[in-house]
Image (cartoon, rainbow, N blue to C red; front, top):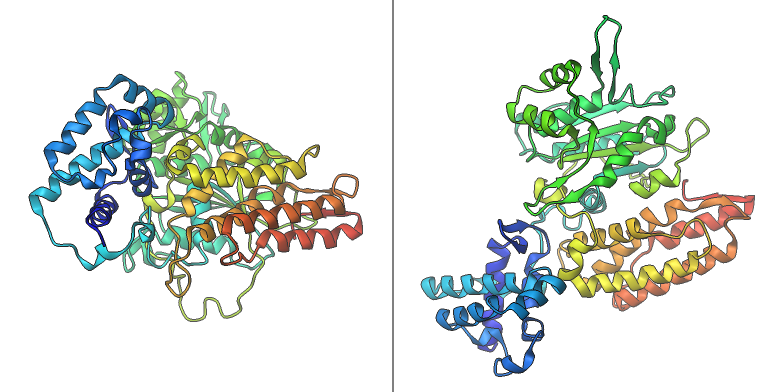
Length: 513
């Protein structure tokens, strides 16, 4: 291995251990996933110097330069060059300057310590994970749930009764605590709340609350959802799970209207937080101040509520369990467009017989709470991956042209986030490294089922055999192109489309089993 490659691998090791940021801001560095590979990519000379390659053609690789003063000189020149700064801000969102700053820090640290490489350093950068992922989760059956939640904290679990839909939500909440701790052993961890949806819910009064004047003065009667939001605000470093059991016993768009609107207001801030519009607007009336005092004893949380209203905390995860039968309501596209959907009809009769609790691995903020909400937040750092996703989605959308099932920007963003969030899960059940292309294709297949197929339903005037056949071909061809056919993805989407086509014989079909 030549010296250039050694330095590059040492830099990758350095980033893997201390750098978890994606962009440089006035406040420092934001915590973001996927940083390591992005910083490595933007330090290559064809990207670092592309704004004016002629004046930098004497540098063949930044990894040839390991003297701190020399690296600092290059960094000073670039970071004081208006053309470089403009190009970096407009086209690369600060990635190039960020990679350069990190390399300066690395070279200085290296020259000071000059430590010996450990065996861990012998791994190639391609083998290093982008995010911190619990070892027990990398190839686990829980990976789709975890990455779906991180991509968007609103998940629907659909399946026949008794498949463990509500149980898995409880176990994900339990996995946020250390094994052996009181919360881990508890019947109901404090970061878990089950709410049974009632058939007579036609507005948000039972879930969020309402203003009552029965006593002669205005008082707000808080619902379980609002109380749980306050609890989550008091412990923002821990993921909090609200499980709406039998979610479609009532029309979701009626009793959950406020949440459906607010979840789409999520915005990523420069400090790494995600904010939303208030689900309950602030008020100057006495009932609001009384409500705040009843919801929380935390003065910081009270001040936040009084100043901004009651907003969704970043660590709040809403999961709805769904049974599709004659007693339930179907989902509108408004709901499906805003949620991630996973079907749970597979039954393992040996499951739960050897361990009382599911072995998921320790989950924390980094694994479950996303700090990116739009495609633009991941595009620059993962351009090649994102372009592959967009090419695939364009082919799928071409088949859906002229139908009510065509996807738009919201779904595009969720495709990009889901695929990027899956990149760290790069090992199979035998702990062997999977190719990135396979990981991308696997994620594409899963998000296709979640966000495209879940929206397709109707009689044979809306959904034809030809549409399903053309969609199957587009998906199959797209997955083969992405994976490179090195290892074929066992497609959930193609299996579901086959099932949907068989149901169409009756004159009607849908995603829901």
